[in-house]
Image (cartoon, rainbow, N blue to C red; front, top):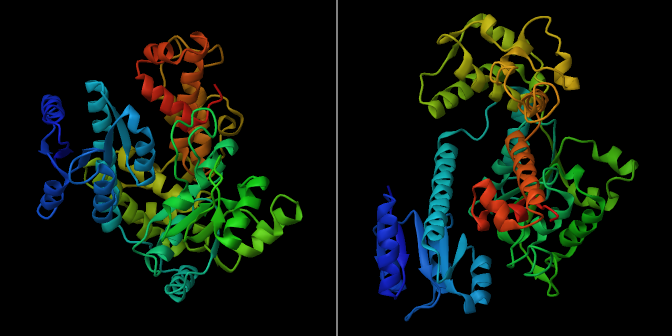
Length: 488
């Protein structure tokens, strides 16, 4: 396990953090100045860096810039006195993971370092998975056309509009376009404009200044700033609110934008790739999408075929997803019999590649033997299957879901039917069958928001008391309220 590195000229701060992290079983390495720490990077690297902002021989902000240049994904926590809050804002702008005000609460500091460590591990896991996974799979003629188009665009910075049904792999195409472009060494930043509440989307795209709105306790860079020198992927662009389309058009036209609450124009050197499952021409005719923005985005259009138009790719994709699921679960990969593979290939996959991936993950968990037979496939792949009314109308869930719920005699938290767990299971099943993107994030956000709003209602808006009732820290509830865009 990599160490947590602490840089501070104050011996007592280093000593306290060393002891606290050691009690948590976390290896730690300390430095009294930035120079020694940078020299150590030649032979080793940390999992998390915790640095003071004011030190003799070099500030924490200078150190942050140098470290980020060498290790862009490294979470860096900047320690600062309350009087240094403006510097903390600069730290965020420089890419700091979080700032830790002095004097700090030790459990809070350890919790923050733990969170940064989890982020570092997640990032490393994603990079490893990305390195092992082929960019895209496909032998079908329609996919070969896509690959050829990516090749032709490899040396171009032109704006691209990717169209295709939900779950067909539009983000994979966007990532391939970025990777093989002159901007491949720069950041790739993705945002799903349909998944972010309308009131938060402007801040997500363009950032905000401290005090721009309730809860904006520090300045924050938007996605355009984060993608500077690289590519910004705007997924589900057809769902962008009309008033924000005007701001996006202005950025694409002259490269300038303002943060929410800001007065100074900013510039960002960004290539934009957009994607949608909708017919944008029809959206323009309906008055829901700006025609001038459509023409600005529609410079080069790539159509990604649905899986039913590339059935010959199903066997290779299924083997790939079964292997990946087995690796994630630490089990032997399941194998599809010829009959099961034929039945799988005949399916129309309304949720496209994402639905196939979910099915393969389900088989890795639920199939009774190593060789998957037709009878082992999920209900929706069985001949003559008709979706139960529950999937569409919200009645009792299918048996596979019901088995995971508490018995009917168990107390329900609502008065409706089998309670909130049953309702959530029905909702989740409908979303998954429809191939809806980001189901985990969408349902998790709804669950967290309802918990926080209920606790705040009970405590008449007192956040600290609500956090205590929920068993979370006061900083956590404040952060969650900001992330979820709750109007409290």
